[in-house]
Image (cartoon, rainbow, N blue to C red; front, side, top):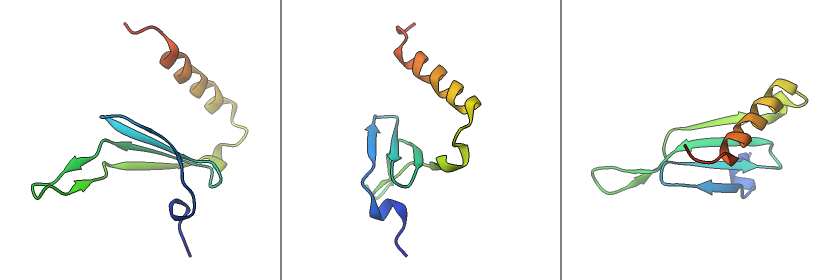
Length: 78
């Protein structure tokens, strides 16, 4: 059976320090550290955590936390 990341192209944000992928249909959010190279020059994906958002549906605490994160992202740099 194919995995969700084989069936769907995610929305992505990629920076030098990491990546965030959102798989809308699968309701999964992935956060990864930046890619790195081995001594042989092979590029590897950084450590990745996948969160199944279906487990948090309707959770007001998570919604408030994410709103706080968005506010911090919109704030002027220190």
